[in-house]
Image (cartoon, rainbow, N blue to C red; front, side):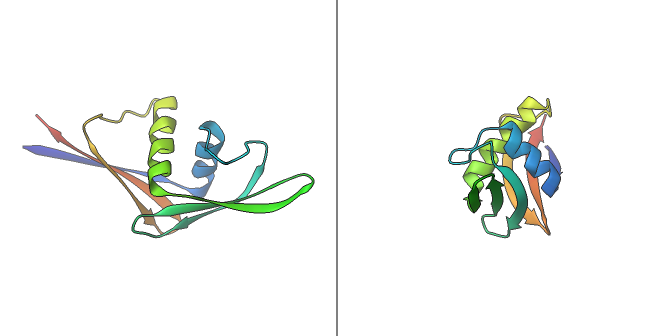
Length: 106
């Protein structure tokens, strides 16, 4: 049996693109993201700091289950292949988020 493991690393800039591309429940897309902070887990989470004209800055914590859904949707949108039956996990890697995909071949 052959096992394939891939890691897709999301920098903070790429995470901003994820949140701008895929709608997130509870986040107003009109707000400008000023900072993204990857919080180590387990499970990992992401804190988004944002601001909008005429309103105070705010923070939103995005849990691992939400991140996984958003990342899968983002990869689909960007045509990054993800095997359906693969094991998918998230973990913090410094200030970046790592999306790991493990599948059995053959």
